[in-house]
Amino acid sequence: MALGKNYTAQDCSLAKALEVIGERWTLLVVRDAMYGVRRYSDFLARLDIPRAVLSQRLATLVDAGVLAKHRYQDSPPRDEYMMTPMGAELFPVIVTLSRWGERHLTTSGPSRYFLHRQCGTQLEPSARCPACDVQVPARDVEMLPGPGLSGLRSDPVSKALQKPHRLLDPIG
Image (cartoon, rainbow, N blue to C red; front, side):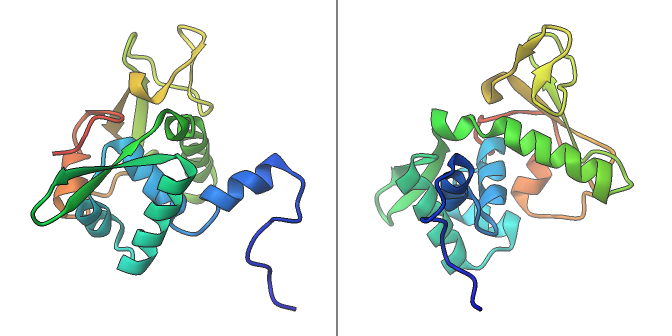
């Protein structure tokens, strides 16, 4: 029996969310947009994703309102993809899945630390600041490289992300 291509028969909010972010590569595109990647060529170089797949994932995320497409150059036409407030709400999902992977699938430690910019405290896996007792939105997070970051990638975006960086600020 072939697998279905969507979850339209499911009466469930999780199934509806998976229609937008559940395809392979999509959460990595969202992660990188959260990190400040905005240009198609930067997503392409950083993710090693097939062009057709990247184009389709970006279009889906724009259509769903997770990313907004903005023309930054007319000749030749070039667009950038910016995280919307709806998309930024996915930050706790990104942190939680990353921390789960660190606990269960790696031995080298976290590749990134996420700190509350206001107080410098490391966030809990749920993106909550234990010192301030608040849920921290992505725009208030400083990301630092951790011991699990291999540094093997040599593209300019990966190199830029080897330094402290405020989430949602553009790379470059």
